[in-house]
Length: 480
Image (cartoon, rainbow, N blue to C red; front, side, top):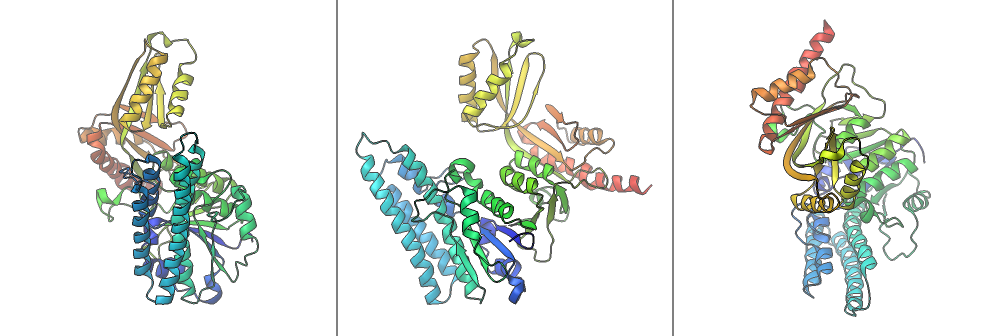
């Protein structure tokens, strides 16, 4: 099981497009032996994990959040029935055969009834005030997360079998198992007996393991499973199927006719995208693939013929160019000013410790003699807690935070002449003031910190001059 197969992950939005997924990805015109030599790692259907845990963006409570709150004895039970209804509805949309639909619904009911019984037992224990169930709540979160991936993987297996494909469900969710092996041990021991030449494994994106996938990787756990499966089975290529191409900018700002599919780039660029919160691949997953020398391809589920974007460790564009313009629409600039900082060590470390305690995501930072500024992907509420924390330690420091936007031009080599002058000129022509700028010597990215209100205009201006006009200018210079 090395070198001849691909490991492919299907995102949640792609999972709900059943017919397209079959036509463009799972079968896509293949027959007989062509169907095999692949391992699929599947996410939960879009929106399902939100119902099980909490809504990723709005925070709307799901089963887990309602159970933890314990403010309504029937609240989590109602939320669980909402999950059951949603899963049954998804099954009904996918399966016409009464027998297959019955199998899909029975699987869902067994898992939900088992989890509900577990939560009932824990709720009874919790009523006795002397019992601390904090550790058990972490386990509950893990079990609930795994339910979403088990549902989608089981359905996908049934769907493929109904079309004559020898698909097998590989359920990593630790359902009804008590042995807590490591992530790598579970993957190796489970996949080793499977003949990839005649079997198509459908793997749950969630893996129950000693490390605790949700606790450690939050919502990025399915990409970690995907990465480790690829690394441990020595795949020739890792592929992620998303609902969009990896493009030079958000097509919603321009229209697809003006943006460009990136085509090729490297893991350094993927890291910069992850740092800005773009979901190309989880940084931990990308790290494993890069270290193992496995190329990653990001494909658009809805473009059957498109080759997507290939990400490799050693790729550098033939001529310097900006590959993508993106950023963070609303970040926070945390400014720490202390007049007595000059020549005194320890301030930077203390700020980093505070940011780590509050789990703040650092995008970039800058400093001078008496000021350290961190640019963070964080909410205002978190910033208040961070400032209170730092102010208690440094009562004489002036500490403040303000919302900003960050727009970044990224590429495997952006060292083209006049890039900075062109970028600043484009922003100035739109009346956009640059509050701060960060340009690393490695020439992989440059970040412009601007007012939140100017984000869209800044992305458009930079894309036009650095990607559209800039790319043409570079080609003309190289031709000359």
